[in-house]
Image (cartoon, rainbow, N blue to C red; front, side):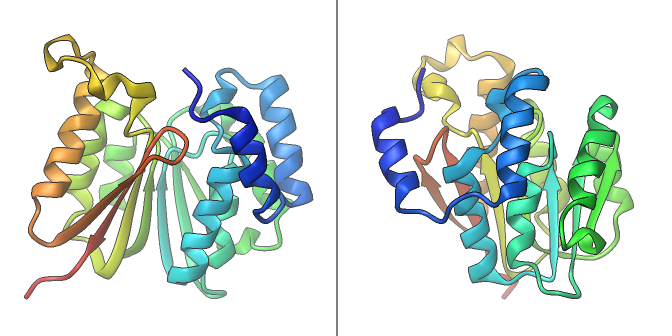
Length: 216
């Protein structure tokens, strides 16, 4: 299932900021050399992440699911100069590729890669967050939200990718696989939380936005 008519995506990309040379290189090498290149955020979604980060100007970003580093390098574009972006990747075979990409970026001092199970690493990282991007194992999205919901700064944003899951969320719930069920469970839990404002954008494969209003 295509996310959007390729002609419309090309038109939208034409009127969006172009990829940097480094992002173009990551895009090309991922498509050719890495399994499941469909997991890459890509140009249009990457520029959306960059724009959100630039508007929000976070001091601390957490990304769950690094893949080859494309989305992290988009998110870091709005990070405060003395801020930090922590990103977690479970696949250790991608570690050196990611580090090479990060080392080639001018903000390499702000990028911190952690390799391992996200549920463990999240609890090991101290402090609160201004911006979180979840793009990992779909069945565990709700669990990540539970770990993070009280660790967001007021006005903090949690973005979750692939929440439309190629339209599978429209199927009969009795036929959901574990990933689809996990995504819907996440969406239900976030929307029901009284301290979060929610918006689901049909961008690419769906991005959920949840803003933490803070405790009264």
